[in-house]
Length: 495
Image: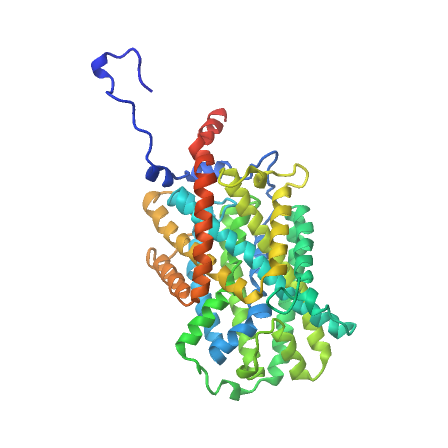
C-alpha cells in the first residue's frame, strides 16, 4: 500500500501493475490453505468418520468389478489369451500413478483428489483441466458401469423367474433400445445411500465388496474345472498392438483406486490411512483381475468371446452345464457392480464439492446438509445427470472416454509429485514415492503411451470435452475463483 506521507521522490512513479493473465492462470493455492479448509462447506461440514478399513473398501468398491464383470468381454477379442498380460500392463500403469497418489494423499489430505494436488503445484488453469478430466472419469464411469449392471440384472431375472426386461427398456439408443431403465435405477439407488452420509454409505459398500470378492473366488473355483491349456496355445495372436489396445481399454478396470483420495476430508486419520488404503486396494484388485482373466480364457476359447457384459455368467453356465451357477454369479454381480456405482458416484460428488468451495463451479455443489454431513444438492444433481447419461449412451464409447480422462489426470498427478518435491522439499510426508523422479516419470510415460493406444474417435470426444471445459472456466471460474476475488484472504483474516 502506498504511504501517503512519504516524500514525493520516495513514491513509485506508477501503481504496481496488476497480475497479468498468465500469472492469474498459474495462481496456486497453498497446501496449508487447502488443508485448513478441509471439511468446510456451505452451511455445514463434512464429517470425519472413515478408518483404514472403510477407505480400503471404498477404493476396492470403486475399482473391482468394472473390468471383470463388464469390460472383459470387449478386451479378450482385442488381445486373445494375452489379455492377462493386458491386465498386468494396465495394473503397472495404475501402480506408478498409485504411488504418486499415495504420496500426495498423505501430504494434502483433502477431498479434491488430483484436482487439489494440481491446484497446489501447477496452478489454477491446470487444476481446472485436471478437475474437468475427473468429472469425465467419475461421472462417465458411473454411467458406463450402470449400463453393465442392467446386463447382469437381466441374467438374474432370466435365471430366477424366466423373464427379462424388454430390450427397448434395458438398452440405450444405438444398442437396439430406447431407454436403459435399469441403469437409471441403480444410479438412483446409489444416490439414496449417499444422501444418508459417508459412514452409512461406507457400511453398505463394505457388505457389497465382500459379496463381489466371494463371487470372483467362486468363479475361479468353478471355472478352473473347465480349464483347457490348449486355449493358451497361441498366446498373442494379435501381437503387441492388440495387447496394448486391450490394456488401454482395461485401464478402465482400475479407475477407482484413487477413490479413497476423494475421502480426504472424511477420514479419521487421513495422512496415515489414505496412502495405505490406495496401495492395499490396488494390490488386491490386480491379483483378482489377473487370476479371474487367466481362468476365464482357460475355460473358454478366446475367439468365442463377444462384447457381452455378462461374460463370466456365460462361462459358469458353459463349464457346469447348469444355469444355477450362472444365475448365482449374476446375482453377485448385480450387488458388486452396484457398489462400483455407489463409490464412484461418491468420488464424483466430493471432487465437485472441492471445486465449488474454490469458486470454480457454482456454490450449490458445496452445500452440506447439517444433519447428515452430506452435500445433498450436489449428490442429487450429479446422480440425475449420470443416470440419464447411463440410459442414453452405449457402454463401449463410455469406457474409452473414461479411460482417456483418467489417464490424463493420472499423468498430471505424476508431475505434481515431482513439482511438490522441488518446491516444498521439507514438507512432512507420510509416504514417499521410491526412486523419485524416476517412478513418477515412468507413471507419466505409461499414461501417455496408453492414451496413444486409444482410438481417434475417443481423442476427438476428449478434445471436444476439453474445449467445453475451457470455455466454462474462462466464462465462469476465471473470475469467480476465490483466489481471484480475494475471498480466501478475507476468510483467513477472519480466522
